[in-house]
Amino acid sequence: MAIKPQFLARTVGELANKDAIFLCDTGTVTAWVARHLPVTEQQLFTLSGNLATMAFSMAGAIGAQLKFPERQVVVLIGDGGFSMLMQEFITAVNLTLPIKVIIFNNAKLGLIQLEQENSGYPNYKTALKILIFQSLLAYAVVKVGV
Image (cartoon, rainbow, N blue to C red; front, side, top):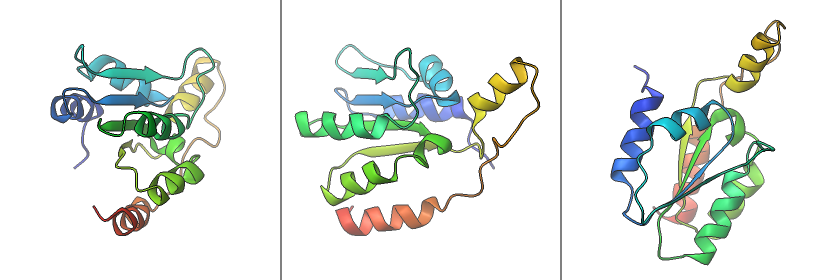
């Protein structure tokens, strides 16, 4: 059974540390998180601005974790954006940074598909093949020692 993105965003916010730093990536994940992630005054929340750069969140999280090593850093990202940031992911693992990565997996580039449909174009090449998140997670857990 799939987890609803609204529930996931709300639950992450409720379980996060009181001074957590959230970095939200670009895509449909932005809409879900902006509407449903509860953020307190002590927490920080950032996302890519007008340029809507996909896959920026992990690089931002690395910077945030290095600047504030005592704080919890949480990346909220779609599966499309996550597939674009393997170098940053590996860097975070090799630096043993305790960044939490929450992947919203809908097996497509959802915002791109929506933009195509709204422009009157047929859906073209937005489906994502199954990514092997479990293998990456196993690598990260072994390397970081979580």
